[in-house]
Amino acid sequence: MAKKKVRRKKAAATKTTAKRPRLEQRDRKTIQELVGMADQVVSTARRRRDPHLDIPTRSLSNVKFNRRKRFIEMGNNTNRRLLFNLSQAKSYMQTMLVGSGCKQLIEQGKNTSIRGLYYMLKHTIEGTKENTFEEQSDCDPIIEDVEVFLGSLREELHLYADKRGEMVGNLQLEDNGDLIDCSRMGSGGYGIPSIVEPSAIKFKKCRAKFVLHVEKGTVWQRFNEDKFWRKHNCILTHGAGQPPRGVRRLLNRLHNELDLPIFCLLDNDPWGYYIYSVIKQGSINLAYESQRMAIPKARYIGLRSKDYERCNLSPSVRIDLNDNDRKRARQIAGYPWFEHKKAWQKEIALMLKNNFKLEVESLISKDISYVTEQYVPDRLTDKDWLD
Image 1 (cartoon, rainbow, N blue to C red):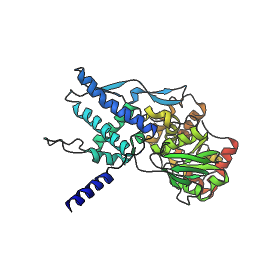
Image 2 (image 1 turned 90 degrees about the vertical axis):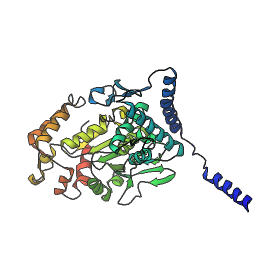
Image 3 (image 1 turned 90 degrees about the horizontal axis):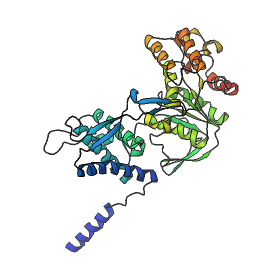
Image 4 (image 1 turned 45 degrees about the horizontal axis):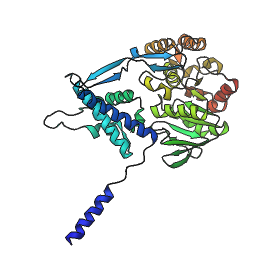
């Protein structure tokens, strides 16, 4: 009996030692970079020098607009993080800990949220009363440090954020082995995941001629219900306001891999202008990933400052600008990618002169389907958009 028990235990042990998943080429490269980050500590210590990491500076002072590429990119400034500096030792070790956690995720073929990684890495250091991380707010900037140090997207480190945004249209894709037909997703559409890299999302068949990205889910719902994407052979997306990384990255891939024009239907206010700016030129926080996020050829199809008179809208739909709106509008007008564009300067100046802003939903005052049946089709036919 005893021998049989031993055999069973061995068999069970064999079962639990699962084969590691086959890694994609990008995963192998990311692991190589993570191991290189750790090896740097060993090689530096062997030379009897202070181990350090040179983390690219994530600040406005280290961001510039590349006029040739037409997007924001990070400069060359770095901050040196030293292991044997008492004020930097903890953040140094936290950086290595995050790198180790991400390596473990990639090797196991698993993904987790940034909240999940925080709990995965949080523990009390043996022999002390100090935790590796006290709050998630301590962990998040370290994750960003590892991203920018390695030149990897967070999603390539197998970390995801909350899912926000939907898509519907004439596109078939493969999502982690499952075939998804985005023209057969009902009223809810396909929920755009945080991780949309080619290893997870593969485009299989596309008949669409362009992408229409709208600001909010409420507007997206009107377009979906009216089957705008079917009538005009397009893909319809939204990002629930400021689009999250997954939506921006997916739009970038649809544009660059499938050669689809991107049109943006956003509110006529400083926030709508800013969302367009982020989609088109990238953001300061993600300047190191503009190459894979920004879409310099994206076009702003509306709402426009002149639409109040052009569409004969009721005074009741106007929303007065406040001081913060006016300040933000002037800041946007001064962005390097807008300051030399006469059409954008005229657009922002007219909004300030009007002293009110308009939401896309204001077009409902004309007719419930005015935006889908007249406004956007007219803008597309007339090629009436801002670059």
